[in-house]
Image (cartoon, rainbow, N blue to C red):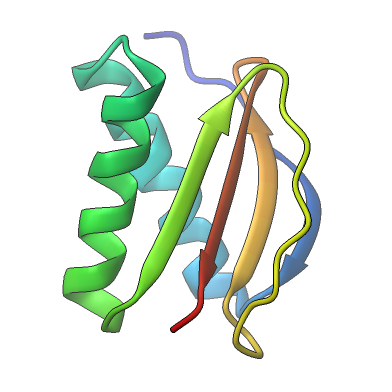
Length: 89
């Protein structure tokens, strides 16, 4: 996979956690082709490393309106695919 820069559209998350989200998303996109599987990979990583309960949406065309815990939200594009990741619950 060619290395592409992520474009963060909105974030309420530490810089280190943002970088982790981008890195994990890039790894997921290498391993999986189906958006649902990419989202599951990212969600499971964040649940394990940052505690539950994380939610992840991956796709090229979706709308959303969510409530998240403070300092636990990111929305970014990587390879023309949007990733929304947030903790709630």
